[in-house]
Image (cartoon, rainbow, N blue to C red; front, side, top):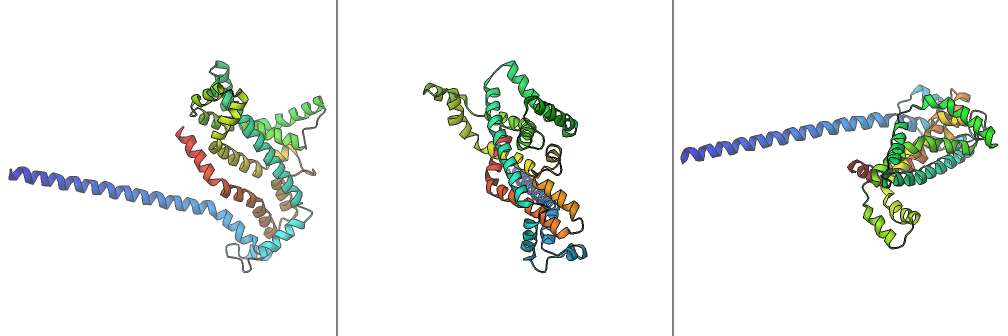
Length: 307
């Protein structure tokens, strides 16, 4: 009995040591991941930090000491005022153009993609499966391959229907709808598959039409993934430079903020204080929208990953 008791004690001590070793390894791994995450955060934040501190300096200070903090932070607002009234950048009209294009493009992408994904999920046919696979395949096509055909087709289509698409707002919005809908339909498709069909059947039994079922029952349930689609497409469209350059071109009265900043950098290549301030002013609206909608974005991403 004494030998058995001693053996049990040894086994218990070994199990306790093994558990403590595993807990120590888990804590060490967690600390290592936290350190890596903090380093990645600093690396990501560093360019934004450089833009912020150098926006509060004069042109000489930016080139002389780019890594030091500004002596007078109020210089940021003086630089912003200079940017706002400068006729070379036309920040006010550029902001209006970017806002109009982003709002209408994102709104159209959300509305059409949600409806299309809902129909593709609920239609158990081979055609629906084929169309969904075409949307998924469209995500793999690089933009550089289709950019020149896109301009040619816009010119041909505009001449055919008598409605100009190049250098206009409708052309920009249609372009963003085409490029943004494939990913959006993919995200909505995965989310809608997790919504019980019994909810829609109950609405139909109560007399709701098919359109009413979507807008009154399904669409409100898509709020988390809609926030994700909105912020992903919104950030992309707001910051995009290449597509506006192709569709709107240079010297056009319609120009987005990235185009205006690029033109401004060309005109004032040595005034880095104003160039960085213009970049900061372009970043502020996106940062504000992200901070407001971040909870919904995280909910949408988590829900999408679970489903």
